[in-house]
Length: 626
Image 1 (cartoon, rainbow, N blue to C red):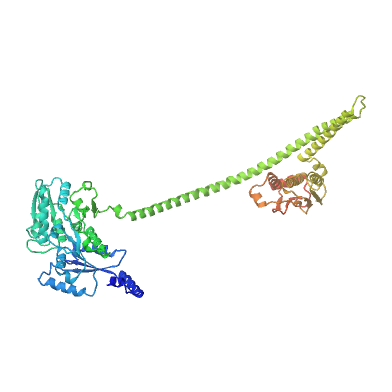
Image 2 (cartoon, helix red, strand yellow):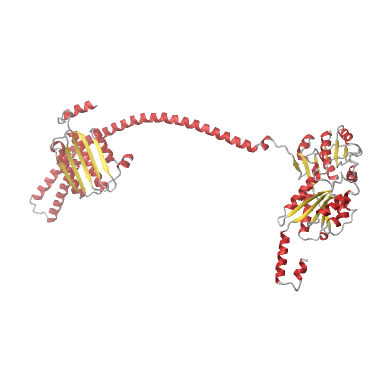
C-alpha cells in the first residue's frame, strides 16, 4: 500500500512526507523471527542448535531482531487433534504481531508448517534446518520455503577410528528403535559396506538399554563401538541420546566413537562429527538474507560441509590414542592442563615475588656488609688521614725550613761572591774609560759606556734577587724597614699605590716572627700582582699587649675563600697558612668576588709575663709548647 501511495500521480508533497516517515518508522521497527522446534529446547542437541541460531540472529549489526521460541513437544504429546489445537493456539497468539520469518527445526516442525502454516503464519517465509537429504527428498516445498540440509556421514568416522586402532577386528554399532534411530542405522549400514571385508560388524539395535550396556561391558579385545542415537530402546523406553552416550561410554570396555559434536564431552573418543554451531550459523544467514528483502524462491537450498575433526583428550588418554596419530587439523577439547598451564600466572607472580624478596634480602645483606666494611674503612682512613696530615705538616715545615736555608745560602753566594766581582768589574771598566788613549775612537767610548750601564743593572738585579731570596737586612734593619722597602719596590714594579703603616720599634720583633711576617707580606703582594688587579693596597703592622698583627688589604677583584679553602688554594695561600701555623699564629682571610681581599695575621710577641720574646725566650717557649 505504501508503494501505491508513493506512486500516485495525485499525491501531494505532504503525502510524500508522511510516506517517507512511515518507511523510516518501518525500518526502525524490530524484525520478528519465530523458532519452531519439534521437541522442547532443554534437550542437549536442540539447546546447542537454539543457542547458535539465537546468537547469530541477534548479533545482526544492521537491525534489531526479536526471537520467539515455540516447541511442539511431539515426543510427549501425540494425539491426532493435538497439532490442530497447537495450530489454533499459535494462530491466535501471533495474530497481533507481524512475523518476518519462521525457522523450522528438524523434520516434524517442517511438516507442521507444510500442513498448518498457511493459517498460522500466512505468507511468512520459512527456513528449515536439521533435516538431511534423505528426509527432504519425500517432501514438496512451496516457493516461500528454503533451508539448510544437514549432511550426516558415518563412514569418515569409522575410517578414522580404524586408522587410530589398526588392530581392530570387530565393530559394534549401538542405536535405538525409534523411526529416527532406524533411519540413521539404515544409512550407516549402507556406508559400512566398503569395510565389511576388513572388519566384522555387529548391530546392537534390537535390545533394551540395560542389555546393551551389559553386552558392551564384556566385548572381546580389538573391538570398537560406534554410537548413532537412541531415542527409544527395544523395550519402548524413551531416552535422551546424550544421556545414553554417557552411560554407554562409561560402561564399555572398548573405545566409543560417534558422529555428533554434541556427544563430545559425554564419553566418546571423537570422530569426524558434524558441527551444530556451523549448521545454526548457516540457517541464520539465510534468515538474514530474507530480512534484507530477498525472496526465499531466489535462495537455493544449502547442503554445506560442516563436519569437524573433534576429540576428547580425556578419552584419548583412557584408550591410549596418541595425539601424533590424529589427522592434521584435529581439534582437542578438555585437555587437562598441567599445573604449570593451570596456575601459570600464579606461579609466575609468586616466583617473581619470591625472587624479588630474595634479591631484596641479598641487597640488604650486601648493604649491611658494605656498610660495616665502610665503617671499618672509615675508621682506618681517619687514623691513616690523621697520621698523613701530621706527616704532611711535618714535611711542609721541613720543606719551608730547608727552603729558607737554601735561600740564605744562595743569598750569601750572590752577595759575597757574585755581587762583589760584578762590582769590581764595573769599577775596572770605569777606570779604563777614564784613561787617556790616543788612538781611542768615539765609538769605543760609547760601547764602554753601554757596557758600564748593563753591568750596573746586573749588579742591581743581583741585589734584588738576594733580597727576595732572603732579606739580609731583616736582622740588621728590622722588620719595619724591610717591609717598607719591599712595599716601595712593589709599588714601583706594579704601578699600584701601596701605603705602609707601622707603630712598633724596628727591633721589637724577634727574627723567627719577623721572617714569618715578611714572607706572608711577600706572598700576599705577589698574589695581588698576579690575580687581584688592585689599584690601592694598605699594609699595616701593629702590636697589642701580647701579639703582633699584620694586615694586607686591597681593592682588587677578590675571590671566594671557602671555595679556595675546599680546593686547597694555590701555593701562595698554602705557604701563608703553613707559616702562620708554624708560628702558632692565627690567620683570617676576608674576601668576596669584586670586593677586594684582606689578609690578617696575629702572632704572639711576648711571653706570658709580658717580656719581649728574645731568641732564648722564643726557644724556651717553643720547648714548653712542645
